[in-house]
Length: 468
Image 1 (cartoon, rainbow, N blue to C red):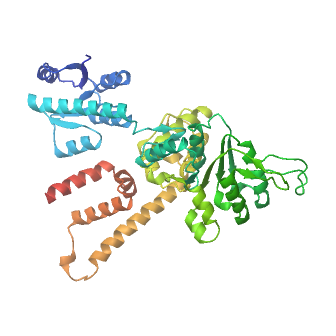
Image 2 (cartoon, rainbow, N blue to C red):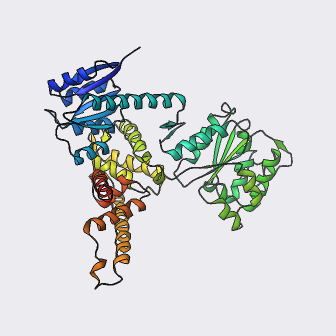
Image 3 (cartoon, one colour):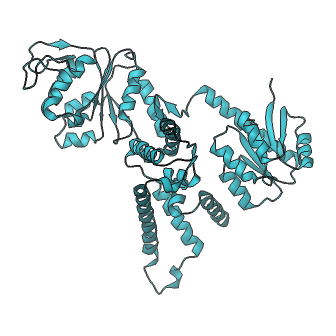
């Protein structure tokens, strides 16, 4: 059985020898590097089960090594060791992804408990990954690890093999056609045709012909018989995007087709039969359209057998950053540019911006940045000014709400000094309010408050200690 590898990045030889002696009875192969550069070089070739990391290295602060391990998502648990321990160091290390924190000198028992916990945690994580792929970062063209997208992936997998009609709901740019393609690829009809049709992109008087086809002479310009999307998708999947744009009259014909599989071409007399799987989508709220009389209720219930709700990018946690990294690599190669990564302030910006145009807007922004600039790193000055001003408007809105909330609490009696709150409490309320307005997303709140996320974590820790 292969031993667990533990990497010690430590320049103090006596400490390394002590660690080696403490761990000699464990099933561990201890690797030693005495510089940050050596440790990073080792990590580029092999990922150990755990890392023992000194913060005071001769060539670089160990915190930078920790940040790099966390940034790259390396599947190892980092135990920080330092002779300069303090609450602030511990909080910063844990905030930046450390598994545990040891202050020198440490006892053998303390080291063993920490290392054993790190190894056990790594083992459990590997078991979870093998049993169930619950943290897929990619799925049939989608990129994203957020829980909401994991639920979408599961629904698509379960629905694809059935014959049921699927109704995809979501804002413009969230990937409705991509979801329809995934359903088709995973279905028994995968070898058949996939025919997409955007009902909003076709003139109203031609939609019926596009769907069902027409015969020669059916209307001005119909110079020959023409197959519609229904016929072309026989034995496959027909994707009707923006179906709420369809006229009431055509909705009635669509309902009859869904119920029987039969249809007539425009101007024709013969009945044709096809075997088609229907997937529909809309960026509107279907029940609102039904209540307004613009969409048939019976058609809605016929289509809405399996609904799939695609979340907006703003509700997908860190997915915007994962998608942006993929697009950076893809577009850089296409445009023969040299970009390899984003600066930290750009990453924070990508996570804090609301993305009203969703993934489509993110694609356009990345293409704009790459076409108009070059270099190895994307910097904040390369981001289009319009996006930065929109972000500033969001920042101002949040701060106004925070201030209004405080003023409402404190303006009842301007002469009553009992209403004056300690400065730390005012700061605490402002930060907690911002976190709430950002849906619990601390990195996003930090960007909009113009402070670092680690600052918020440290302050929260301090307030918790004061209240305990």
